[in-house]
Image (cartoon, rainbow, N blue to C red; front, side, top):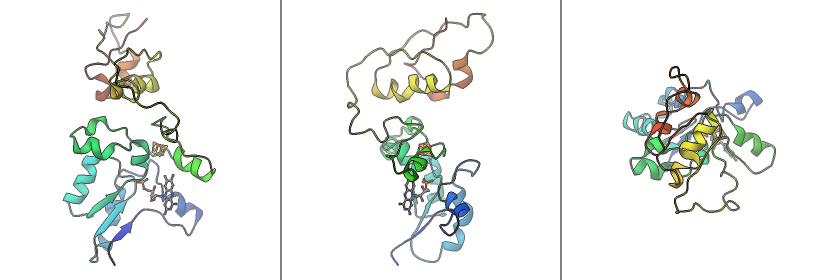
Length: 194
Ligand SMILES: Cc1cc2nc3c(=O)[nH]c(=O)nc-3n(C[C@H](O)[C@H](O)[C@H](O)COP(=O)(O)O)c2cc1C
Ligand code: SF4
């Protein structure tokens, strides 16, 4: 045997099959708790809700597995390995385990990702442009902040710094402040109200 590859779930029952693509509340890297009995000699590959490059490194460093498999994490962000290798793990678009992708798969339609609108449209969407543009995203909820910060603007180098004015009342958080991940607050992403 060249290697052993393990994942959560099983195909013997419908309930078991849902475990093959574990959604929350199954914890990220939960496979770690089940790997030890499979340390029987051949190199071990562990898969299932491993979405974070640092967590993947830790699993290997801790001897849980010799390698990890990432399916949905790479559907969300095919550039994950390159970003991790470049020390840009914070730029990784992160799979949230919502299983929109597998729902499309089971419906026999092209897969899509709730986190990455390019997924499934790679051949039809225009390639990323190198020219800098100003992009305004109207709406400061989770989707708007995500789109403004990295999904479209930052990662395509279209954003440019904009001043962040105080909230209208001068106190209390703005929507963007409530929802913005630190990634969405980095230089180059500005928010405005009014
Ligand atoms: C869209 C999609 C299609 C899949 N197709 C298969 C398949 O054909 N055969 C298979 O053994 N596993 C398939 N899987 C399961 C993955 O190989 C993997 O075990 C599972 O997604 C858990 O890993 P992850 O948490 O890294 O996504 C599929 C998963 C997804 C999301
Ligand atoms: S749709 Fe995207 S975010 Fe949701 S589970 Fe699939 S790959 Fe992950």
